[in-house]
Image 1 (cartoon, helix red, strand yellow):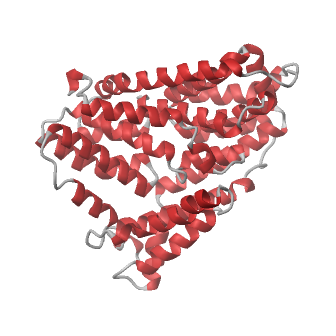
Image 2: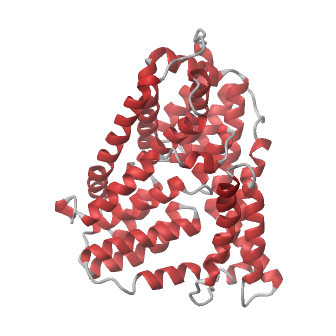
Image 3: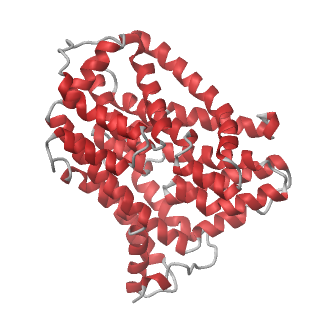
Length: 418
């Protein structure tokens, strides 16, 4: 059977098509909250049950065709690329740990930064690295193990420290010129990257400064409770290679391969990513069936019916990309999915294309930054040995920029682009 023939076909827009997402959220999120234990319901089981349910409710295909359509979603090129990054990230993280690179980097950080600036310093480092390399995943891979080591030596909450890195990682993902979300947003809206950056920067900077100020205030009580060991400089080399090549603009997969090579320990850590890979595949398959059954089309149809003003048009664009991201768990795919429609809405209601591009990118990063089944949250939780849900309450920056982005719509800010 030729799977390519199935992909373009979709059923009519349907609210029922979104029900697998509800099944997943009820199994994973609601149950965990009810029993007050984020580890009680494994995310793998939640995705398996919701995936089986999604296959069962799919209409117009035989069982074999349903499984093939599910597999098309799991084998999406973006999913495959993410899996290779997961494999390499697991290998690098474990290899760096085995040779003592993480401990050496933690000791250097504790040596260079005073205790009261550790939290703000980690956030600033995450912002700078993500802005330089244009990827939140690469930033998380590099910094979460270091943040975890600092949490151990300062007796800080590990989920809180992980949340600092994830938040800072999305600062650059949203603003960087080489971020795939920036490229997708500007191309679908037909505006220059530098113009979209100017709009975004005026929204993101106040949010980042507010969160940075909080971390300075919160860091006043931080104290190193363990002795700082001498820094073994040679063991910091893998991290210097990873950060240096990433900032130079090298592909994230090649960056991780070079990092693994400099540790001299090859192969360890790959098997530890097995569950994360399975989760990613099942999420891709389930979300493809939601698309195939008309779930995304239903959302787009309903949201665009009642737009009648410029402010309403901007809110509609924000809602479209939010829900598309919620249904696809990939901010770039969400922007590509609703970008052409957002462009039409912007043209019809005279929304500045620089503002519509900024809205697409910003709100997609907000949702991607807080959903527990997004790639960034999954890999951060894996590297820190936590449940993704335990990190959500500490994601201050994604929430802050979401608030500022909404205010920019309601208050018509920045004026020049509104």
